[in-house]
Image (cartoon, rainbow, N blue to C red):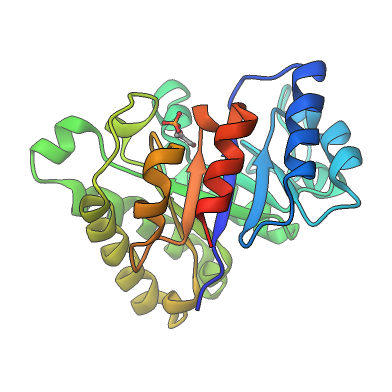
Length: 246
Ligand code: 13P
């Protein structure tokens, strides 16, 4: 039985007072039956680490450089994230693919850099609405995941995968549990074929997960939890979603 994982992706939201309030509500709502983490803007990592250090809650970042160190102005290395105690880093979120032109190869290199420093990459894959309507969903997510598997070789079983259909992100339009499950099953089969450990790996669903749809999504055989955007910023909603993952 795979233990569920719920990760809040704060994106570019938050402020010191708001973060303190949100994290203290989360700390007070423990224990959870699932593993719970928050991926916060990098400037808040140190404070988040200090706040959560004495709890079992985990934290992480939203992006990482593929490089170890050097003259890369504005970038943050996996070693730095590790020093901040990050357990996770999101790589290849569709917003980074779309707004920062990240390629499948770059996403794979970032995932590799993270793993090399002991930070677990949460690798996001997902199709656009046009791709879904053109019947390309399976080909797109397999291509995105395959770039990472190829780059990581035998370490590929150490990643977490997040299926985030682009058309469901921030739109209030959730994939139905059946639609999500179908893609998760494809991804798990691909992971199993490539690593032999697919059955043990976590595949999260992301895209308009809310307290009222979380339980049905998480009840699907191959959905091991969620990557939560908007609802992770509201303490009551995020806590309800964490409780829905048992
Ligand atoms: P929403 O939950 O706001 O749709 O965002 C999902 C997401 O992008 C998480 O990474």
